Amino acid sequence: MTREEHLQFCKVCTHQKKDFNQGIICSFTGRIADFEEECPSFEEDVVLLETSFAELAADTKVPAASQNKRLVNYLVDQVFLVGCGMLFGVALGLVLVYVFPDYLYLLDEENKLADYVLGFVIAMIYYSFFEGFTGRSLGKFFTKTKVVTEEGERPDFKTVVVRSLCRHIPFNAFSFLSSDGIGWHDKFSGTRVVEID
Image 1 (cartoon, rainbow, N blue to C red):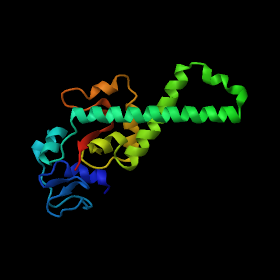
Image 2 (cartoon, rainbow, N blue to C red; image 1 turned 30 degrees about the vertical axis):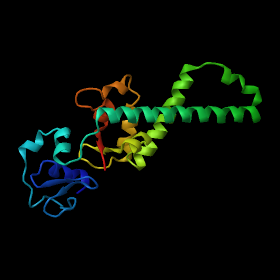
Image 3 (cartoon, rainbow, N blue to C red; image 1 turned 90 degrees about the vertical axis):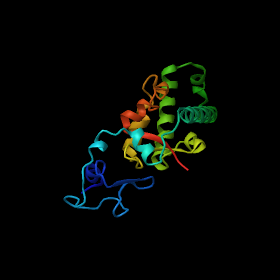
Image 4 (cartoon, one colour; image 1 turned 120 degrees about the horizontal axis):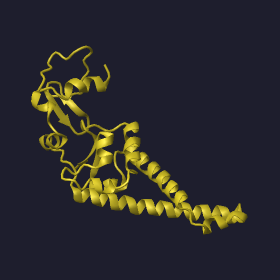
């Protein structure tokens, strides 16, 4: 069985235990599930079927990141993204000056679509790279927070790309200000931001 198939049982088992590094593990063995057809110690917990992520995080001492930390993450990441955009502009200018001087006029023209596409590409590369390999953007390193799946595990690269794409939904930056502190890019990608030691 795959890890996802195991989790269908483990997420609602009374014997589950949350481990920040491994995700959901068995409280009997202290390891992730490795059974083939069915788990001999499986006991369905009706309460777990209806438990929200916030309650799971509180039960496992892995608190969800506060709205203040989420705001700091956003601001630090935006400063870095603007810096990357500026560096790209300088590099493009140097290439045009020395290699294609006849096309320097392109930098004088204002093109909002090109600016948006460039910002989109830079943000996709930035978030996908950092959160894909470390689970943390630069802002999350600063605030000691991390991206995890709803099960508390490290997200795979596909999930991180979906999360990065969802960041470009209009007004997404304000969505984490809701009472649960979960943004649209969290909900649609099945991820959460939690505090770490």
